[in-house]
Image (cartoon, rainbow, N blue to C red; front, side):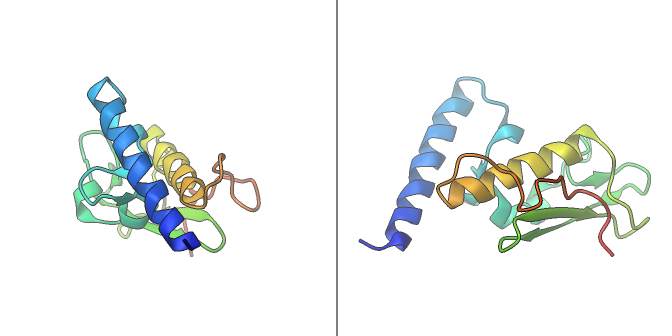
Length: 127
């Protein structure tokens, strides 16, 4: 069995664990997998399904529009950018997206922590 089958198994296991944990009270925004897309969160967080204006999840309250998310799997960075004002919202929801996407990137690779190669949060505006 190659690493590809290990990756598929790792995802299936984590999806199942998080589905059960969510049924017991896990905050759905704390998942590193996606219940809807059945993928790692970092692979689908840019989908319109993940915009939740009421919580500020992928939402710019100043511009009242969805925020773009770019995940660089090679460098393990997560960047958010509002197309309206050009900034990343400075909010708990934005920090949560970065944290859970970084954890998703790490889990997909079979690692425990979600730190970037620079060890810094990458949630500032992208140029």
